[in-house]
Length: 472
Image 1: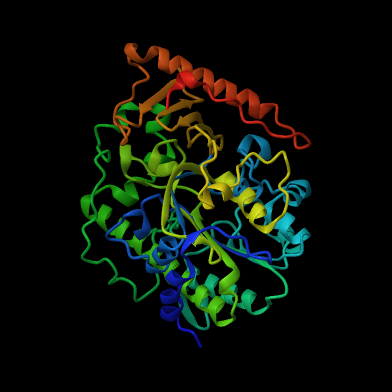
Image 2 (image 1 turned 90 degrees about the vertical axis):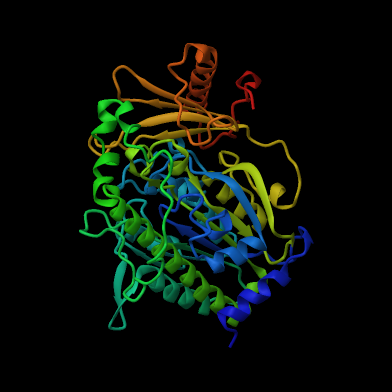
């Protein structure tokens, strides 16, 4: 039997230079975490957090250093990942809203299954009720809602990540080399166990992990910053969840240490799955994709969780590892989105994506090509949680970010020059000297809204042409 260590040691030798397409369709193993912010991984430069399995895969694959979600909340982001559509197109903006039969038909698991793939899904589903999805997959073991971080298995208390490894290994044992497969592992970690007395419930025995680590506090986790926001934002769930997680320096340190423990549990789970993949001889043709459905505030602006358009909330880690590829270890700066995952998987499988799909295949970038790439994209978050979460929309370019808070009176806006102010400390929207740039970004926001409102599932999607006056 091949051990996990032997499997990981062999990964580096699977990649050299360039990109090649195998004769047979690739398998897909898609690891989707929950609330993992962009730099919360070793391969993204975190020197405290231990993620050796993900690091080894990423170092032999392609890392997207500027990867984002188009809506930072689980059900909407996961629907966007499935369908390759912005929220305004798929309309999954409540926890109770499922994908329609037509939407699932045009999703990556629906299209791959139609093309002959064996499909599976375990873990957090999060897009409406779970039961109807059983008929849409060959193997489906999702849990209701957010699920529990700790579960009972074989008379023991284990992490949900370990349970997902066991279920995924069961799925893999039912696969064969004669039929390609696509397995999505939907972790509910490192999402906090909301409303629990302690919200980061790691497996017993893992308390020694990171116990002596000193976590740097972000510069913008400054109590002077949040009062600058309108009252609806100050009174929002962002502030309510801050108190039980970050209210004191000691609580802050232990919360982030426990958040890191949950991520390392995910990494160990991935190692168990990849070890089984190797044991079954399926590793040489299995593409591994890793990302998260949302980012996460570490107290920036006095906030917790996600939802708004600041970088900690919308930026996520992402890599693609292809054992058939050459030229691993690249880090790409192009802006990749959660809506790009579906068209990427479809192109790699040789399956035509619907022309109405709004994401872009990353395959040309994976090949090392330099295609004309997006210079901006649209953000939207409409789930208000009975008024406790601010609704926002905006536009992010490679340099600028514009956010519009939809429910404040008067309208509250943020504009950041990310080149000069990557930590988003200085809101330029009120600055008279920036009035022209603010007007341009407002107009760009309106252009995006009109384009998305006119989208139809039976028509080819065309992204609005970029306005060069916005700058780089």
